[in-house]
Length: 270
Picture 1 (spheres, one colour):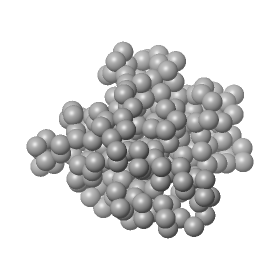
Picture 2: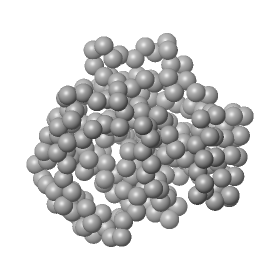
Picture 3: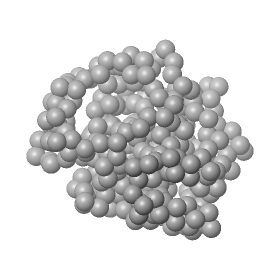
Picture 4: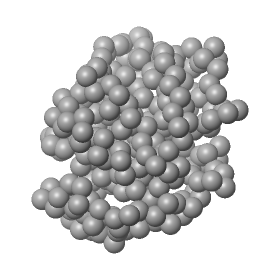
């Protein structure tokens, strides 16, 4: 908790009213405030999950999907706040995990689901905490995003990626540096094929930390999510995961962008 408060205090550009919002939120959480119907879904590979033992997470349902494989199983007795552990094959990174949770729980989703990966509070601390707190206080779909001057399928049309180094050191190995190239490329071509080119979406939620209301998930069919997952569920590290990451704000659209999307300048924390 002290680490999170220090991060907020060190942000010199934060307006006083926003600063007070977060301080009040911390006090509320420390005194046990709870919102029923919020579930935290963690996509874990080989990260240390000690952070889940923080009191910040004690009042919420936590489901952890583990893709670490043999030698990286999760000892439930070490993590008092994790309610359910589900083993998955190591395909499609966090994006596949998020889609699998939606597909498998489509008829039994929580009112609000906060999605994060196993390293989020460590390498993406500021983004994780403000996403969590904003969701708690507003009870709405929440994306903290980088904003672009035009629709993302246009400004990032030519985006491709061949190599990716994970932010968390525990997730770096020789199997996940080089990406399986997308069958439909570049990003803009894939995006238009999957979603069409008629949506005015100018925000991208990088780093895989966001929350979505149930109503915004089930406005699309289970088959819709199965189709998206079909692009990322056949390889350990497909290029299309990075396409899906950039399209996450589109996947759950429509929703009220004015109340659910916040500008956020990415700050990577090692």
